[in-house]
Length: 526
Image 1 (cartoon, rainbow, N blue to C red):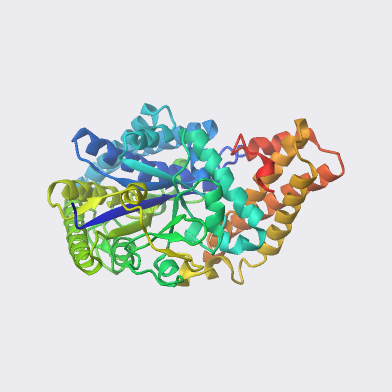
Image 2 (cartoon, rainbow, N blue to C red):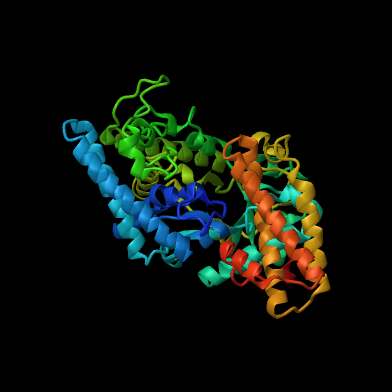
C-alpha cells in the first residue's frame, strides 16, 4: 500500500460564447485556443500513456458550458476553419524563416502541432467529448460536473432556487452527455456556503472541493486538516480540501515551475510582433491584433530581452520539475502518514488552461509525472476522489466554512465596485423565475419553450465569468453586454408570458443563439 495518494484535479471551464450572428467573433477564440493548446495536448498525453501501458488517474471538470460548446456543430466547423488558417500561417512562417534556423525549427514544430490538433479533432468526429468519455469509460479519468453556467454560489445564497437549478441542470446535462450521473462537482470558483451541500445531495452528488480554509475554518476543526475528506453535517456529502503546497508549486508563475526561464514566453506572439500587412489575414478582420499561438521566445529573464525558445531545454526542465514534484509529494506523504497514522490524500487542483495555454510545457510535465509515479517509486499512488471514498468509508463530520479560491479567499473578486451592480438584477430575475415556475406548472407548446428559454437566459446571466472579467478590467464591454443582454431577454420573456403575447419569431431567434441545454426543464427552478 502506498504511504499516501495524489489527486490531481484540472478544472476545465469556459463561459458560453457563441455568436452565429457574426461570421468572426473575437471572444470565440477563447474556445479555439483552449482546444488547440490545452484539450488536444491533454488527450495526446492520455493516449500516449494508454499506448505505453502506463496506469494513471486524473480528475477533470468539464463544465456544462464547455461541453455545450465542444458539442456545437457551428463552433466545431468554425474551429476547423480556425485551425486550417493556423496551419496555413505556419507554412508561410516556415518559408519566411528559412534563413533563421532556430525560428524555422519552431515554425515546423507549430506546423506539426497544429496539424496534429486538426487530425485529433477529426479523429473524434469533431467532438472532443467523445475522447474524454473514452478515457472515463476506461477508468483512467474521472469527469466531474460544475454549476450549469458557473454561477458563484455564495452570492446566490439568498436565491437558493437558482443554486438548485444550477446544480440540477448541470447534473442532468452530464447524464445526457456521459450516460451516467456525476459523482462529483466543482463548485464554481470553489465557492462554498454552508447548506449548499444539501442541494448537492438532492442531485445525487457525492463530493465537492473547497479551498484549504474552507475545511480548516470548519466546525469542528478537521482532525486531519486538508489531507482527508470530511462529510458535511446533515447531508453526508464529502468535501475535499486543496493542498496549498503542491498547488502553489505548479500554478505560481513567480515561485512555481511555469516561471522557469527555459519555458516558453506566453506574452511574445507573432500576432503582435510581425508586420501588420503580413499578419493581417490571420488576425481579426477588423484589424485587431490577436494571439496566434505561435510564440518563438523563451522567458529568458525578468527583462524585455528574450532569447529564442529551445524545445529540448524546456523538455529537460519539465522532466526535472516532474521529478521534483514527485519527490516533494513522496516526502509529504511519508511525513503525513507518520503523523496521521493513515494514508493521506493530497488534493492538487488547477485551472485546466494552465496546462498548455498559459504554461506551454504543462501537458509535457503531466506526462513525465504520470510516468515517474508509475515506474520510479511506490510511496504515492494516483487516485480519484471516488476511489478514495470507496476505500475510506469512515470520515469526520464537520460543517465547512464559507470560502472560495478567489482573491483573498472569499467573495471580493465577484463583489466589488466594478461589478456589485449586477446582483440586485440577478436576484430580482431569480424571484421572477420562481414565480413563473409556480404559476405555469406543466406548460406545453410555445409557452413551455418560452419558460425554458427564460431559465437559460437567467442561468447565462448568472455566470461568474462576467463579474470576474469586470473585476479584472479585461474585456469589460463584452462582460457588461452579456450580463445586460441575458437579463433583458429574460425580462422580455417574463413580460410576454405574463401578458400572454409571446413573439414566436423572436423566441426562435434567441433559442438559436443561446442554444445550450436542449433538454432543460424550467420547473427545476422551483
